[in-house]
Length: 290
Image (cartoon, rainbow, N blue to C red):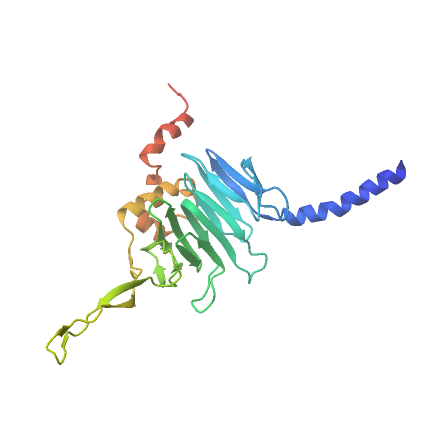
């Protein structure tokens, strides 16, 4: 019996480190309102996920997918000190996580809205160490407070910078722009990795042969690249400002998200409120004090 116990204990000692390595912690849920589901891998090397209803201070695995419900929000702090706040109906995946200072962190926003604060500063000649990608764009962060949304119905990414700068690249074309504080850019989804080829009829000369007969040659289709819309950086428009304020409800008291630069664009934090369609559900938290 004693020998069996020793054998079981030995197996446990062997199994636990592997489990710990698979469940590496990347951060935790700091604040939560409504419903946040964590879609977690069942085991190492598996594509099967199971859902966890997250609670306050819930730890995050480095392969988790975070999904918020209607009128729900979450604030997450990563071990590398990056802070992220998710708006309602949003889904973001942790694809890669920086375990060393020189590694990159990579998050993928499938749909929804997110505002992020990254403390570390990166020089222009250096490679960004924190990336957020959407189906249409990749955002390389250089120490900043910024907003990203992706609408899967319109296939458009909207990125706005409140402090610092963000390098935005359109997936498929490689177009890049630097979005400074107070600016935004919209990036459409491009289906192919190179410009589309369209056929343009090439005009041919009409000739007359020796018998006086008019000769009209066959029309030749010349292939020319289709023009791609350039990325345009412009001041943050009012609609985007309202979306950022709605996304920022949970961080309206946080020093990181209420910098002078952010307030100049968004106005005073006490006016960062949910959108109108969320208010009925939010009122459920109000207690009767009559």
